[in-house]
Image 1 (tube, rainbow, N blue to C red):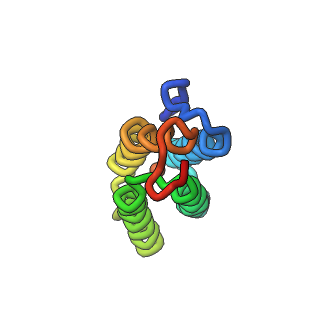
Image 2: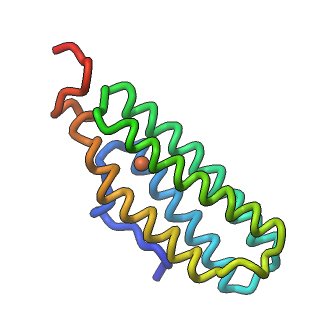
Length: 141
Ligand SMILES: [Fe+2]
């Protein structure tokens, strides 16, 4: 059983975004597995870097989608993305500074909760706009 298990509940129904989310689940699991296996700092740091980088890639893509359809919650959603990006970047800095100072379990739990709650509560909200079921702000008929 993976640390954070994918299920159809997390599907937004937009292939590129679902693929990104699956990749993020995989990267959190990789980080978890390396920590739990007692892999060295390099391996854990590498998994953390991979996750932080992909978070940026994914947020940029998602923000593009939300912008293109005139999603009215865009600004608030971007703020949530920036908050997480800031948190994971400071995490990375802390880890690079002294990996022993990091509380691994708390971080893993935080990442799992953030990712799953964000998809279910925030990402689901833009779906009807991206799929055209609801009309976005400033969009012509
Ligand atoms: Fe999002």
